[in-house]
Image (cartoon, one colour):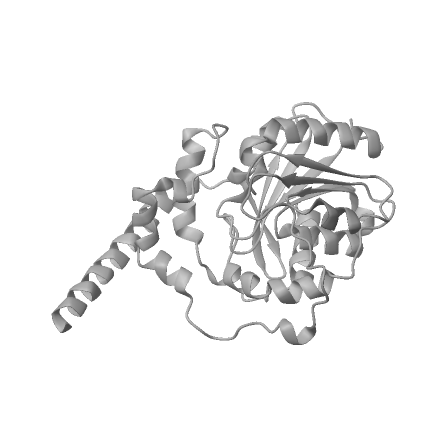
Length: 315
């Protein structure tokens, strides 16, 4: 038993050292993208894709929880939205942004976003789009900075639970072992991805080979990092904070829901939270939770039509 344990420990040590060396080599050989913008809590990576033809309006995209390389993840949708200025702000722990010791509360996340967009000179009012857990942040942001937002787009967004969430149910776990971080640091994730790249590779054919390769590398670099772990641990607490919020009555909201995922979508839950919004629409599309992987053309077509009809000057 001791011999076996020693062999396993030796293999893990070798794997960890090799993984560290490979991470360093990959980072040195891979060109970073975007512009690092300094905020009060560190540098955020902001990726700005100028429009093919000027519209005078920007669409700001926020990724779902744990997405390793948000700007690459949104690439198919960005290409389809080529008539608009598209901006992706990678949160702390994502893409080429810093890690941060600042708590991943909805207040910090929205204030950091506001600061980054101002310092990156993204003109408002802009359309704010959020995938998955970013549904919390678009909701809070639109209430906190209403004058800066002209419309909201939800990509299979997370909404707070319909039942009341009590404060005593939302304690943030303290201490414990970061198993995801250990899996990444030990190289086990790298070997798993090498053997089964489909674990993290996007579905569909909308990505270039270079984008896929870089996304795989960045999954190894960013998986299980402390910032994303803290954000994960705060989901219930952040849900409680936005549970009673509604989008402003006059703010147009377009919501895409995925029909082909393990947990069936609940259109009624989304519609109920938008009853006060004068101009809103919910669109069901075939596909998994990451709808923009396979449904970017359909999404872009609907986004253009919705914005043209509901946002002045958005054409």
